[in-house]
Picture 1 (cartoon, one colour):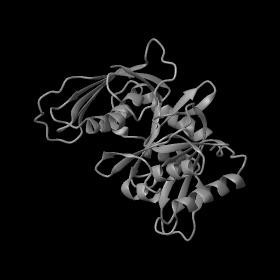
Picture 2 (cartoon, helix red, strand yellow):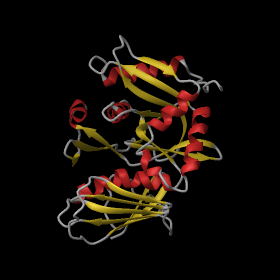
Picture 3 (cartoon, one colour):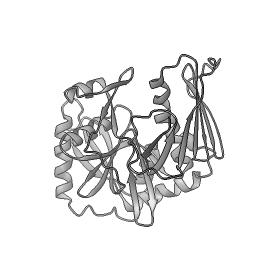
Picture 4 (cartoon, helix red, strand yellow):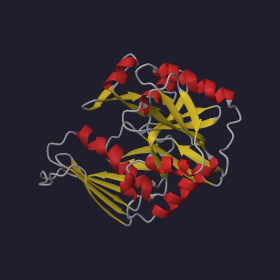
Length: 304
């Protein structure tokens, strides 16, 4: 059985079910990317979690007791599951590490974060693991906003400007965030992750990128919104790339680095600071809505 999906602005044809990807409404004859799930192979002797090899146009990853993954030329993903590996575990690493490598090979700019559509344009939220990116996007979704992506948000440079391309149509939430949302319908995706569908309020089209928010937890009396200037913008973007080591040796490495400079010149990059123990996710959403309303023109950062 062949399924055709639409994600990251790409038509993806797969011989496996990938329910986190939206089905393509009008599949073209030829796909941009093919995903091939091969027959099970004997378990590997490799003991190193995430052992990978990177060559120009090639990326190979081996996850013990799960699968071997290969990404070629930004067009093909081949998966060899190890005997006895659970299908959801096989898919887990494909949706993360492998897709990240694919996006690098195609010259996109993948950030470790979530994005939502607003009246101003796409607002993107990045930060360290556990900083609340997915939880924040899910709260925006609960309040009526349309999400674009979760976990990996990809920026594409087009003749019309920078765009955030829509990714998969599900959130991946940790257990406490899942509980705070009232335990909606979900499936278990990993030991401590739940997959929550975005439903009809999912943005299927690319949206112009307006601002990137770096989530930070500090001992602050109230949330703060601080726009970065100068080289701090580029540094912060590179620090929040998704698995930047996967870019090593790829032919698009220079293009991706140049795109960091373009994004820094054209997009607001701001640090959002709050106290995690006192600022609820709903409070943070209201704070950001207020900050955007007080800064309605969302001017571009000053050029230095």
